Length: 142
Image (cartoon, rainbow, N blue to C red; front, side, top):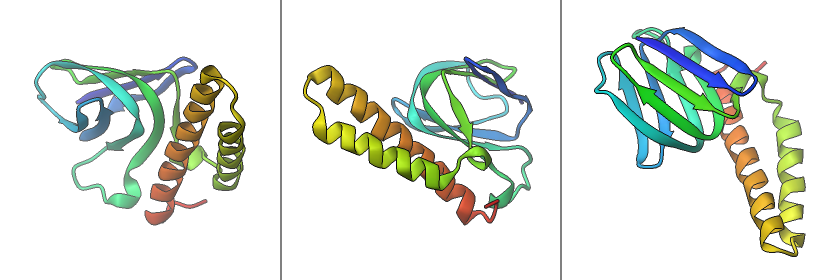
């Protein structure tokens, strides 16, 4: 199936894939070839792409994403998100530092707007750390 992962900064993935796991508002879904047409909202989480049926864990691509939408057609899924960070591109030390800073903002928030902004930052860094952990476990740590 043809998978497209499109962000505000451009196309992250536009090629054939065996399967893709997506974090939707209703829970994780796995899309395979000939999936029924569907539109869904994506929530912050991990997008996992398996390029070939025989690919092992160390061959999977994991992207941290922070919400968006997916349209699944007979040709395959088109995923539209603001951002998608490939696990191989995430620096764990920098992400841990950013999460600590976001948690500090969360603890000192004085308004509802500041609180929601800080919580979104904490959630973003948590997803990035989850993807970095998947990369480490698969032996793709660079």
